[in-house]
Image 1 (cartoon, rainbow, N blue to C red):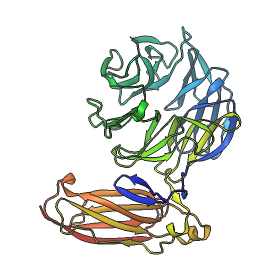
Image 2 (image 1 turned 90 degrees about the vertical axis):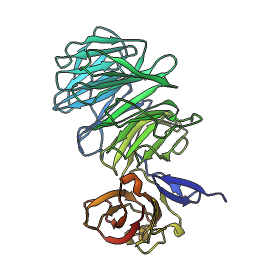
Image 3 (image 1 turned 120 degrees about the vertical axis):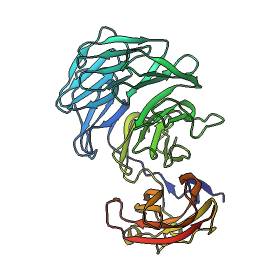
Image 4 (image 1 turned 45 degrees about the vertical axis):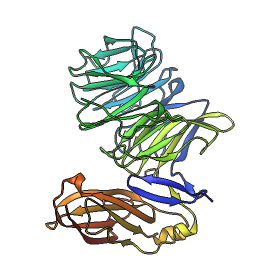
Length: 441
């Protein structure tokens, strides 16, 4: 029987087929003949979902329950943006909605055209931008009036600013994906790159590090505020998965989602990706338009799915979407253990193996529970020099490669420490082990 191999960053786990289950599960409401396009959270409690025919859902308890809010429009609603005490939504037929009471009521702003508005972004409550199939428009009065500031043969899909001056609009021309950039608060725009085969659909920044995703599993990354972009993991040949959305909780850990119900996660800034969900895992067809994470463990996706009929769907994870193994032999590990690295001494790379035990509660339930794991390297003065693992993990054996050259270390003795706590990284550690190793240049 062939084994499947899942690579999580530097971790390699061998899992027999039939025992792996995605930890993205469907939650209500399930609304037939609709599609959800976007989900955004103002904080860990308040969030909105938008979709076809003017549908707006709201949660005030972190997504445990969702209720429908009247929107006074039947237009499809495509994007959501929170800014201070205001919420803006844009949609088809020139629709822009604004709320100042956390989405309970909405003011409809009239625009002088009937175009589909694909994205909206504000840099303060007065100054903001929207995109269409060929335009970028700007407001300086909170959305009451809009001025065309860029006109091109580009179908824009997302616009986001990283500060008051620098912004990016991504989309598609007739032949390639395009990144447009401004450095003067939208007064002028220039094409930064146009060599990508397929549309570009979403962009997000964490400080100076940014990501763009799009068709054919394309992921672009910048580490210099968007001065230049590169592919951390080029996909050749092109894949069947088209990414619609992304969400990074920090500069390294993030998720992408899109057509065929695909969800992928990276823990190393896009160098490696693990497939968490795909076509036919739930239903016969699936589309994911938006993904949002509250932290590294809890998050949501929205889109549509099909059983006997088409319906709008919300998926949720409470463990970061990681997989778990139900088979008895896979969860029978009874001891936590940190092994001695090998080789030791090393130059410049070594491997560190550790083992996470199944907790008693999980053993009784015959299922697995995530435990928060950190694996860090310190010098002999106790100063942290590297973080190799910092996320929830299931019971099992793991192996991480440590390359001293990556961290610019000099020869000497160092320590590596494993800490395993509960599902919350702030919980008191239930297991700690430290070992020494020697780096010889």
